[in-house]
Image (cartoon, rainbow, N blue to C red; front, side, top):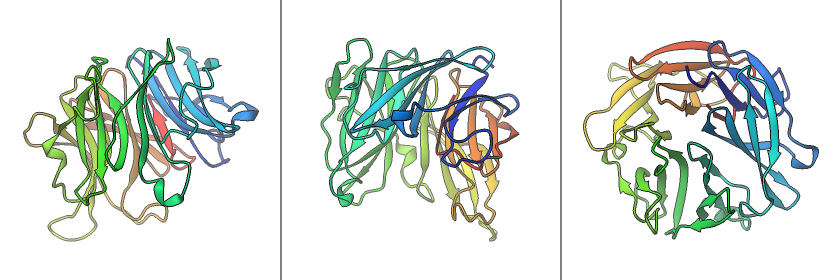
Length: 302
């Protein structure tokens, strides 16, 4: 396991993992360190991994969104938390953020600061170079863009697009080298027509598959299944990597887990259920259950 630690954000104040960003051992689930947000930063909102123990966290600081770079040592302890320039991202707190492997570029989306009814629209999507601070914005039709993720080649990004025309949301794959990188996105056909709305799509490290969570009925009756599927980008049947039969949960009436993330190598996924996190080995579709006593994180990265 090349990157043995992940970072999770928990809203509540109970347990070793809250508040703040908890660093955890991906082999045991144990908390190895806790990073509290600076006093002026409020609470961490999003986290993304650049690999090799480097993470980026967003939060709200006064009237501006803020980004911090977190470095985690091999022992699972936080070595450095560094604020990045204040004008790096738009004032609206990003709804989605994803670091390019290596950490040279951040992809982000933000919604409007105005009326609540407008906050389902994506107001801005961009790529920001962390060396120069230069942003490259994308042209957006009306709708909602979410769930950004990078493949290991540092040039391929996946995103989910929900148009306002009433069409089903679907996943697209694009090259960040394209002049208009959102418009250049290619539809992943297998992400349309699923039995239920998919969640948390993530592109594989090699760019060949999309991992996503779906809820599927049991044809023999009874509780439905939650499944983590691997859908080929270029066509073909999906693989079932992991599944749990739904059990009554007051926190979520539809899904057993709501947050997933992938490790740098692409060999493992994490799926966070209430009280547990499941570490899934992608090549063999086998899993290990680890404790997560704080409940569920609202975001996590590995």
